[in-house]
Length: 361
Image (cartoon, rainbow, N blue to C red; front, side, top):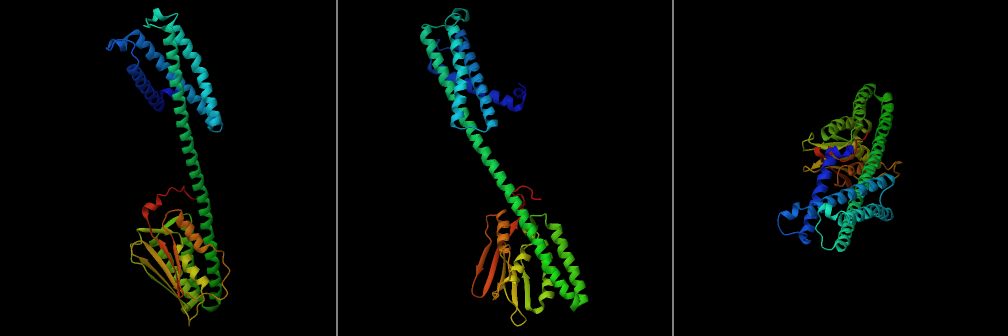
């Protein structure tokens, strides 16, 4: 009863009341009981049929709602339990309509003032019409709840899928930091024996880059500006590590604060090029980072594949592709020719931050 006085309950009541009025007027227009004037709407016969129509509709609809809601809590609707619900609803309605119409058209006909030329015919016509309308109400109601159940299941599956994707995304991000730190510490160990001043500068840059990783590891995306600032320190560290054997250049002609990319994407792609190619002072590895209009960045390197490739976790490019897939339908493109290798990554605009993914912690 409490639900009736809520906004939702009142809205439901008025909707059903309007349905009763529409159905009653349609029947009234096809079945004449009185003269075609205003009195037919306020006559005792008309009032009786309106009140009973209202009663039967409301009782049937509400009882059917309760049966369906109970079944939904027990596990959902299917064909078998829908037929059971229909049977239970009709078991309430059939005796109720039969008793009310019988009493009104026979013992209490004169008391109620009902005008009826053939009570037996009217009785059977009224009860069959009531059963037919109740059947229509029940099946429409079952159809509505079946569609609602399907939509709810679809939404739950989508939520579950997003939660699973979020969990996978966290795992992907957690793979980045230890890999980068391991390589950097190896470089620092070597520098300690070669050039202490440079090692000190290297530690400062390493601290800066690792602070960036710690500050942004909980962020799904970062601005291109932040990633470029981080990459400047990273390039310095790579130049120290590989001296003149590696040449890394950036020429990005876009507004970097406007665009976003997954955290550490550029660093991973540069590291990927270093991992899979051989290089020396005589045959340096050239890595360039530039933009394609306002749409994408291209990371390109000359191809000098290692004879014996380093062991790989295979997380680099696949990691980046999966992370982009969470936010955009734009593809990460990989192209390998005889003398060069390039990866094209989309630039994401700020509205991509309003993704449907749940918050990833």
